[in-house]
Image 1 (cartoon, rainbow, N blue to C red):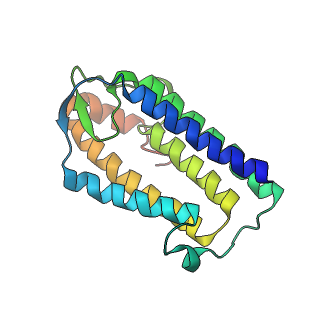
Image 2 (cartoon, rainbow, N blue to C red):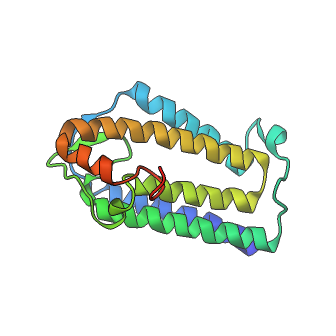
Image 3 (tube, rainbow, N blue to C red):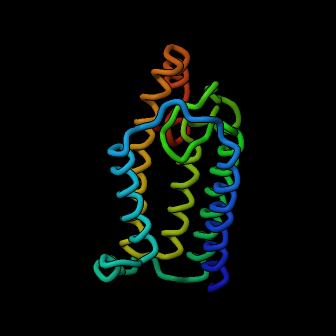
Length: 189
């Protein structure tokens, strides 16, 4: 069981390295969201991370186990975490140089609709949420699942800002894309 937890940590570390490395090849930014907009979802994301990890002042209040820490829950959590990270990385590579950690429009920005972007409009967020759900399953605490809910809210806020930017940039083309492809969960939402 401890190996599953260690592997979950390694999976997140690998994703971080991929993200940092790939960010070096992004196109030049021509428009960026406001700091106020970033602050809202980044703050929620940080609280979510603390809850999922069990760190910080909320740890004692939300540390109650709701899923027993067993080899099965650890392995299910590992599979979901790795699957989610794989989806997010796939989407990141398909997005290519158009990617940014913040909501931006890049120079010569392209509307990517291939790969996982045929299935959902925000597959990086879908993958991250699946990975967070996997990590929460392995951790098994109330706080971990509350963290997933907060992370979902933060990513939804960010995705709505992205939608605004993409709608302004691609107009009717983006409207058609929104009508045909769900935001985060294939065929549902």
